[in-house]
Length: 590
Image 1 (cartoon, rainbow, N blue to C red):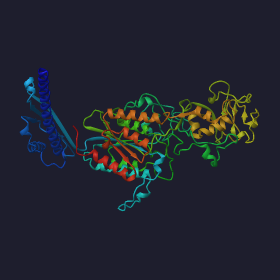
Image 2: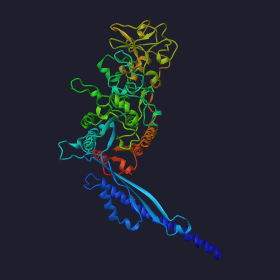
Image 3: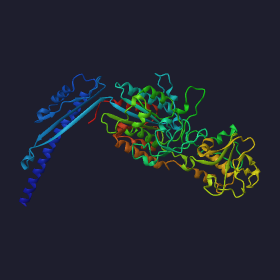
Image 4: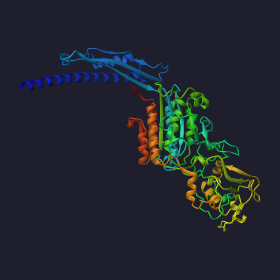
């Protein structure tokens, strides 16, 4: 047993000695790293009057490292060559060597050695910012702010959208004031249940299902351009410009008409609220504003995406125009922000960007460029319905007269809702004209009094004028889905159209399926963005728990620096200002 205990004692001495040597080395390495970090921060300060080398030498001398370390070598500090010192970067490197007391006895390891590097930066270098801002209908609610007596505005009466305009404007002002090199570009992605692109940006992508306009095919609806991004694109930041993607129909898929029995005249202005597409929140998936001819502005462009620019005044002008409407699709706003800040968007900037951003976006791996997305919401994901691809474009069985009234053609064979199901009582009649069927007539007779007529070439009726077959996109521009279902299909007694919900659900489905899917797609895209080197600042503005979790999960780490839970308009202002300050703050970068 004595030999055994002696062996155990020797082993304890060996391993204990090794631990002492490692601990002594680690203590010295940490002391060196901490000194280097402090020296780099002091040398990189824009207010520092001494040279970086003088500052670093001073820190090392006062830290007394020479007494503990046999040898400490550090390279000459380097400073970024900015003429007006708008950016200063200092890099310090050194090595630490710690001689062993015990390890050398049992091996040839006389010392432990390590190299350390520290880098600090202050100022604004090349920075690309995308503001992905929530402009949904809930942003019309109260911001819950306190009135600031120092300002002429009554902030206590502000809505959330007003607070957002003020906070985002303040952000741009702070960033551009510190941008002495004019090296910060800022873009804007307003989002609700979709993201509305200006026509020149939409033209940079390959799209399908473009709407007719003025009877001309593939023109697109002026100032309304929403692309339904495939779910397969969310695991990356780049967005293909050549792969075809479907446009969203400019349609009201949820508004109701309420009656099937009685005829509702689409030509009467009093019926507009149950006939025409509704652009209010939750109704039309690609929400925009109506232009007011009496104003010098085109209000229908107010919520458009704005490509990045270095012109801060232009960005502020667009921020001040933001209007609130629509449901919440955080995932869509984030996806467009990543697509437009990714390096593959450079040809878009070249084609339609202003002169200040030519050559941008920088490569995702560019060390001299920070890519930043600020993602803000006041809600959580809410599903919306959309017109399915099969009924977005192409010839419809619906005709419109110059008098604003409609007819639907039906025949035997083919897809039923494309006109291919003939009512059993139609006989040889080809068309159904809703306004020719009396309100009291609920029968399925083949007489013209039931609204069925036998014209073959095209339908006409008294006062119709020229009658033209509509593209499906024109149908949705003219009429809400429920009116088409009830007045053109159910009143004509087409087979299988006795239930309005069943018929509506043939034409429409839920965009991105459900909230869980959207939450998952958002986190997938945020992960792709972070992996590409994009920093994500997240702001939850008085959002429900689900929205807070979505934004926090998307934000970069550490969350304490990149995630802000703004409970009211005042803390929203503080969050945007904190981010603006952080962009140009003195910080360790290595």
